Length: 122
Ligand SMILES: [Zn+2]
Image 1 (spheres, helix red, strand yellow):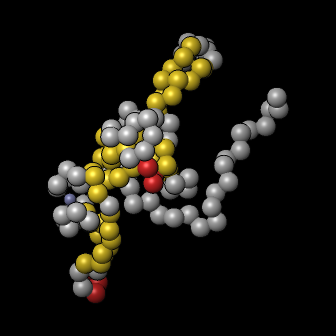
Image 2 (cartoon, protein in one colour):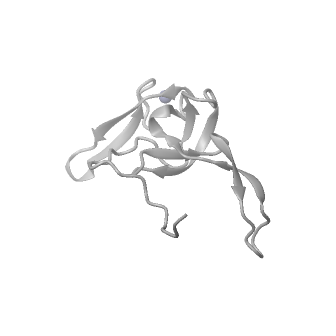
C-alpha cells in the first residue's frame, strides 16, 4: 500500500452538461434499484454522475475515527451515472426526458428546461 492520495477518475476532455440538477426527483431506469424514485442530493457534472437519496446503497466497512464514529459497517449511497436516471416531472409526475428551449426576447432571453412529455417548464 502506498500513502498516495486516491486519484480522481479520468475526466472526459469535454464534460457534458447534466440535465439533472440538485433537488430534482429522478427515477432509476437501470440496475438493482430500477423503478425507485429519489431526490438528487448532489449532481456531479465532472463525473457525469448523480447522488440520489435511497438509491444505490452500498455497505462500507469503515474504521473508527476517535471522537467521531465507531468502526463498523455503514450503508451509504453511491453516485450513479446520470444516464441511468430520468427526471420525474413535477407537473405530470412521469419519468421523462428533458429538453431545453430559449424563451423571452432580447435582454430577457433565457434558457429553460422543459418536460418532453407534457411540454411544461421545470
Ligand atoms: Zn411533464
